[in-house]
Image (cartoon, rainbow, N blue to C red; front, top):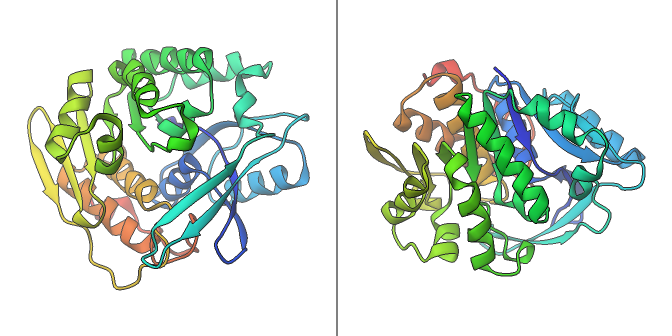
Amino acid sequence: MRLVVFGEGMIEEQADAAVAWGGDVVNTAVYLARQGAAPELMTAMGVDGESTAIMAAWAAEGIGVGHVLRDPGRTVGRYRITLGADGQRSFAYDRARSAARAFFDHSEATRTFAWAAGADILYLTGITLSIFGRDGRERIGALARRVRARGGQVVFDTNYRPTGWPSAESAWAAMMALGPAISLAMPSLEDQMALTGAATPQAAAEAWRELGADEVVVKLGAEGAYAASAAASELVAAVPTARIVDTTAAGDAFNAGYIAARLARGASMREAAERGAALAAEVIGWPGAIAPRPVGLRAVDTEA
């Protein structure tokens, strides 16, 4: 199974000044790999020492890096996490020299996209869309349509960050343009409220079903998740946890658990959402996006 994850890897500066790495699609790729999947990351990085070290760390996690483009004129973007008392987080970004933002300037971009068109699963997010201009988003849309037309799955998480867009309206317009190519949408209710005003998980799911998604999973934070398709709907509770250190990557981890169980192993929507909730509960007990091993090292076979 070719599982292609497209987006941006970044350096993560944590609240205690520790330095690590992350990025929403990278976080999901890590937790997919720890579930036994074999994600291939499609992005661009520099050739400097930091970029090379981060790529080595990705490879050590089981992420394929053979289709990561290298840009000698750029490096890796950075983000800083600020935590509230309840573990909720906010982000500040520095993408001035991010190689990922210049992905389509690379001479190998067209060839890499042709390879990605053969994906069985293509995963991307609203942040992926936000780092590119209109031409780049149109190319992403064309890629997603090719994957879905072949019978592949196109999975999309809204992951709406207001600082990445001129307005919520412009962000939703870009997502709507991509919408008909998406087979599995994984928005949070918080994002969907900001984008469209949807006040219930049912309304959030319907917005994506109307665009053409076969299945929608609406993440509800501490309230769990709501999964819906034409055939059924499920409300799945979150997994209680007494240890909430940092909610960074909770949604990314949920997505990984759900995708690995549902698309890779054929679990039901409820089983997949339960696995995603359990993984998210593990991840928020640690600082930063990437929890130390053995977090996430649970075989998907036990859930299917």
